Image (tube, rainbow, N blue to C red; front, side, top):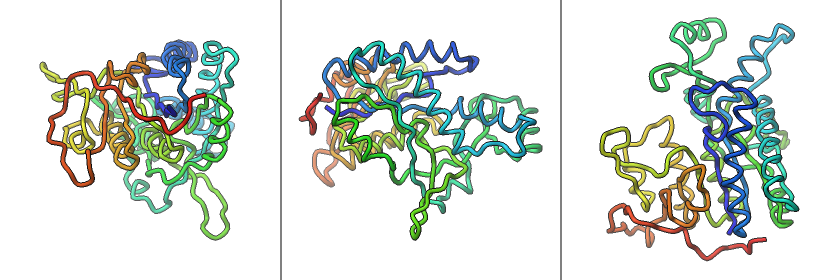
Length: 331
C-alpha cells in the first residue's frame, strides 16, 4: 500500500514542553520507531508533519533580532522548519531502515491569494502567552491572538491548499523505493501568477492535515493516516464517559462535536480524502501506526457504501482494519 502519514504536533513537542532540540530529538526517536514499522511491513510511505511550535519560535526570534531590518516572512520560516524537522526524521529513519533511501523534500503548496483565511487568521503558531504578553504583541507587533485553552496564542492566516507543486518529483522518488518526508507544516504557502507562472511566497501557514489529504489524493495513495496523541476519535471527549470510535463514515464524523482547534481539522481531512478517493483513512496513535493500518487501534473512516446512500450502521466500536486492495505494489 502507498500510505501518507501525517504526524501531529506532539511528534516533536507536547504541550508545555520547552522547544529545545534535545526534547524534539527524543520525540522523533519514538515516532520513527512507529513509522519504520510501516516500511518494514512492505508499505510505501510519505510522511508529513506539523510545525506550529517551531515556526512560532522562529517567528518570535526573527521579530526580536536587532540585526534584521524586517522579520523573515512566514513562508521562508516554514521552509526552515521543513529542513529542521526533516533532518531529525531522516536521521532516525535511516538508522532504523538500513539500506533504504530516506529523503526530506522542501515542498511548496499553492493557495488562493483571495482565500477568506487571509482576512480571518485562525491557525495557532508558537507557544501559549499570558494575557499581558498577548496584548503587548498585538500592540507592538500587530499580532492577532486567540484563546487556545485557558491561554492565548498567536494566530495567522491558514488558506486551504490547492495543489502540492512537487508531486511529480515525489512520484519519481516513490518509484525508486524512497521513503519521503514532504509537505511539512502544510508546505511552504505560495501563489502562482496565472499569466507568468511566477511563484511567490505568502504570509500564512497551511493546515498540515488538509495538505496531507490533498497530497494523498494527488499521489493516488491507498490510505491516509493522521497520527496524534489519542488512540481514537471519541464521542463525549473530555467528559467522564468518552466513547472511542473504531469505524465511521465521513458524514458521521462531521456530525460529531469536535474541538475546532485540534480534532476538527483532522476529522475534516480524513473525511474529505475518503469521500474524494473512496480509499480509507484513519486517525490513530502516534506510537502505533501499523496498528492503525491493521485496525487494532484508531478510528477508520470510509465513504458511504454507494453514492447518495446513507450507511444504516451506527459508528462501531469493534476492530475495523483498513484492508483494501492496494493501488500500488509495495517496494
